[in-house]
Each structure stands twice: as C-alpha cells, then as structure tokens.
Image 1 (cartoon, rainbow, N blue to C red):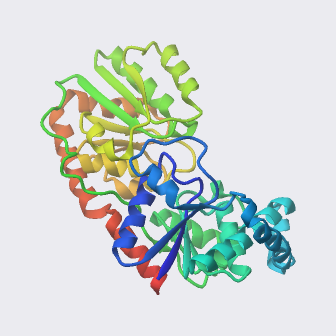
Image 2 (cartoon, rainbow, N blue to C red):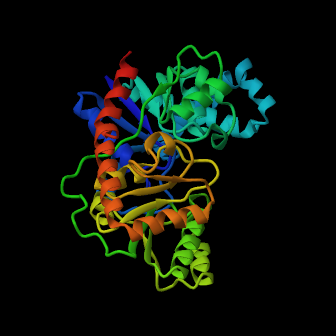
Length: 393
C-alpha cells in the first residue's frame, strides 16, 4: 500500500515523532511518500532533517515545469468550490479567497498523488492542511485521515467539513476524542485513540548522579512560546531561592518568545540560575535530559495534548512536573508516575520542586515509576501499527 504522509512545514524542531513514525510504517511493509505544505521557516539540527527534507514533496513549491499542472488545478478547483458544503463554510466566516487558494493546492495534490500512486494520505494537522486534504479528496484524490494534536479551538474552523470527508479522525488523547464527539456529532466513524510515542534508548537513562539534598537541576524542553509557561517556572525558581534552595533551571528550545524570557529572567534576578540552552538535536535529547533531577512543563491555556517531551523525560527516568493541561492527566498519576499542578499556580509548582529538592529519594522513586509507565504505554512502534491498521481497514 502506498501511503501519503502530510505534515505542515516539515521537518520542524518538534517533528522527531513524525519521522520515527514514518520509519516504523515503512518497517511494516508500506511505502510512504512525505508531503508538506511548505518548507520550514527555521533551519533545524536533527540528524534526520536533511534526509527528511530531501524526501518531502512541498505543495507550495512552484517550478516552471509544473506550471501547466497549476493552471489545470485552478480550473478544476472551481468545480469543488461551487459545492454546497464548501459554500456553506462561508457561514463559519471562512474567507472565500483562502478557501479558493486551499482548493487549488488540494487539487494540485491530487495530481501528485496520482503520479506517486498514493492509496491513502494521513495528515498530522486539522488546520488548513485538513482543508487541503478534503479538497484533494473531493477533486478525485485518494481517501485521507487526520490526527488531532490539540484542542479543536486552535485548529481554525470547518471541522465538520474536514472530518465528514475523512476516512477517520485520530486523536492523541481520550479528552480530544471527547471534543470531536461533542463538536462534530454524527460522524460515520468514531474518533480513534492513537497516542504519540517515543523510542526506547537504553543508553539514555538516569543513573545515580542525583544532586545533593536542597540542590536541584531542572529543565524544560519546549518551544519558546507564551503558552509553554516558562515565566511560571522562573517565578517558582525565584521563590525557592528565597527558601534557601539552590535550583539550576535550563530552558531548551527556540522560538519567537526568547527575548521575553530573557527579560523575565533578568527581572527575577536569576541570570546565574536560569540558562537558555537553545535547541538540542532530537537524537541527543535523551542523553541531555538524563543529567537533570526533574523535568518541568508549566504550560497554560490551549494547545497541549500529549507532549512528547514529557514522554521522553519519563522514559529517561527523571520525575516530570506538569501543569494540568490537555492530556497530562491521562499520562501522569500524581505523586506516583509524576506530579501535576493547576495551570499558573506558581506556589504549587514551587512546593513540588521543594519536595524534590529536599528528598532525593522521591526523585528516584517517582522517576523510576514514570520510566516504567512510559516504556509500557508510549512507544512509536505501537502508534505506527495502530495507524496502519486504521488505514488498512
């Protein structure tokens, strides 16, 4: 079976899971063709980045030799745009110009699918890429499916149109499955629970090098974005310093919010305790995490679902401390396989970190339990097998 695999702006800094899933799908005997909407805005440093980019067909690339296909796509897309269900999208305040452009790209994708002999496309986005796949299908392209990675509200409009034309919708948490049932009732197929996953790396495990009591090395791995809540962790570190607890906090990742985080660090007077490391290659992330005593993800608002960085930290064997957001309550049993706190509650976060600082035995106990849970429940090989099964059926 020839499977198309669509990820917007691939390969990006947080796309290690997608590459691993592609490789596992291919191990199962399927042929995978990678599509992406456009090339990523920023260069990424993963070992797989160059190979992935070389394999990817970018829908927004315009080459002179393809000019005729684009012209034909423009005319064929008109037939799709006059459909009643497409015109109905105007009632959801969708821009007609935007829909027209996405319809052209979707029709163009149909030509690429025929050239590559694609039987089915899976899209890892429910935003505009979902429109592209729906328009591709309506213009005569192959069946498609979608993965929902976060709250529906952050993926724009037209979910009924996208999902009704899909073979199935996969969600990475039970909570997201519930959102699909609530907001898009009457789907022919129930949403499928297909979690994201990690690879097991026996060389990336926490040893016995825990910090001394009342000393704690913590890390956050996430995009530098306001919703990741770095400022709350910074305030918790400041509070711990006032208690006489020494905390070293490293921030791994990149993004447009870097300067704001630097300002927050300066305002808290923590230049000697909080470091901005920048991005780390995906193949090195396990070894990087193993040097810390705890992982912190203080996200707020919407957008999180089942953060892979949390799975990676659990797999290494360090305790994770996460805000209650998205699917973190499905991933973590509080005080057993990790710790949970209410979004934005800096005092609660500081109390958890203080407990870990003062009692190293808790770090080892919870870190070990989290590691066992991750190895039993968060594997890319399982998610890839589940996805292939849904596509084949």
